[in-house]
Image (tube, rainbow, N blue to C red; front, side, top):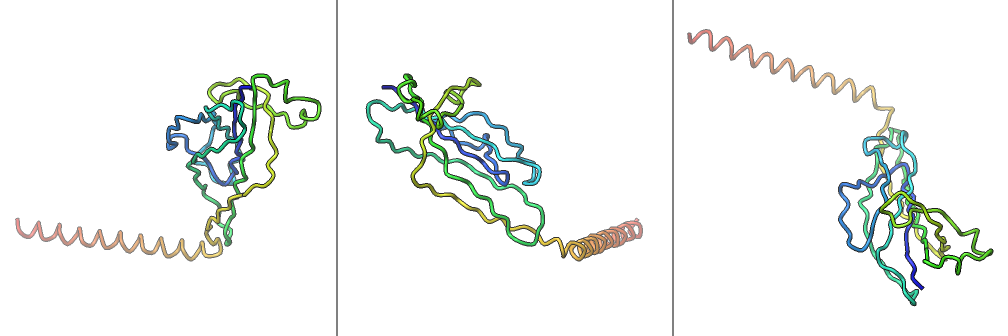
Length: 182
């Protein structure tokens, strides 16, 4: 029996995976998923990310695997309270060359379509293995306080104007000294 394992992660709208900063894993392939890294949380949506193991299962279903993903958090609009981004545990997908062995009528409800090997656009049927227990990871993202926007804006404009005036005055003093020496 020759089987493959893949993982499906739902990357929430409040996060993204930057493919450019991903390490090259000789044991895994990552399907192309499009993330707009410049978009805020409000303008993005949850995106599925498929990671296929290049290690096959043969005769033995005792399996341990480790990989890391560079998950980045997005900008969240000011609300006055922390935003929470929750990353769910990955779904475990199994596909065997003789899939008909597993895909009996009782298993059809666990059948899902996913990239065949994460390297091309073709999709195959995979068997989603339900997890008995799983952990979620939560990130707290501090957001700004919109109620102090006017105060911060006023102070910022005031400081910029004061600095501009100081630069103009310093420049004028230098110009006057240069003219006097000539």
